[in-house]
Length: 391
Image 1 (cartoon, rainbow, N blue to C red):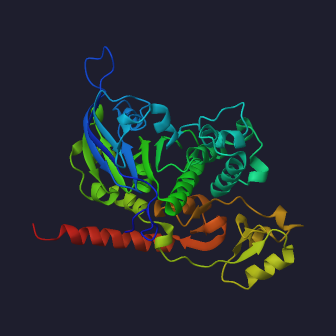
Image 2: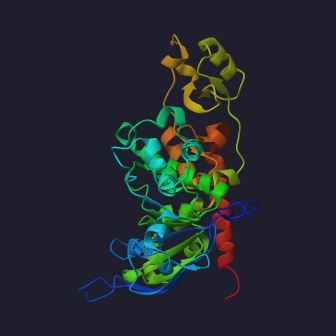
Image 3: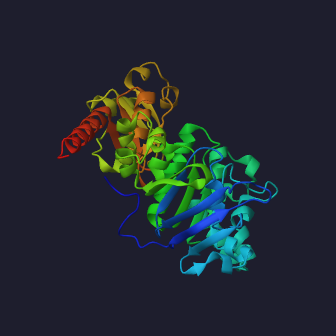
């Protein structure tokens, strides 16, 4: 098993400590958050997961004082968060929420550059930073910077939301169910993008979700929270899946724990296989020749930047006037995707393999159903072996 972060990259994030933190709203009989203590390591993704209304969002929002703690202490790096002016604190912490929260009357450039502008960065520096970040989250600056949020898809808006949260290069990023309002395929793509970014940036990220599968995929550590944000278990995804602390945590893990082990491994952790590829400008004759020279009856179609855009079966080329007449829609996974994502893509595509992309979305190969079956078998064997140890 691998961790989510690259040990060769020094973290740019800082440690966060919640020390006996509580929140009591005026007039409330019970605290919304009751005596929470957590140590969040620098450069890791820590996911708060729990049922609706348990206080996980309030706990996270106390870190940047959008919700003021009633008692306790919060350290960000070596500084007490309560000793910093709230406006200064919030400008030093990235914050991304569901449905992006972009200002509709501002362009994408203005949205992303908002916090650097408030910090009195020079205009040229802000523009350079915006271009850098849009490119980092996979949005071509020349194409998207001058658009308005309404002109973007939900997934694109979420990418802009992440870019805006990173604009002033904060050491800490808070994310409150940021991908919860998009469709499952887009959600998986955004999760992969976050993991890719984290591999490069190594911020300290606190991520709130009610989806345990998302927590397993993203988290270096998971804090399973009960009512009033009581910490039921705080550990790595591997440890929680293998040994839930109590029946409540076991309920979050669910009955599919053995299959969910696929959520702990990345596509990059298994061997990829090659499959024929063609380019969308190729003629039907060229494509048929490529497929005929392989052991497959289909090929991946790439654009001029070597990114997969569709796939084509040999039998659809027989009566096609052009390649465009024969291609079919393609769902891809990335090297950052989990093997669980790959299995879902294989079942959707119905040809026993999933196309894999790497840096800049370039074609890397395919992960096959046989590889996944072998991996599941190995995981089960290892789990059975661990269970046979001395009691």
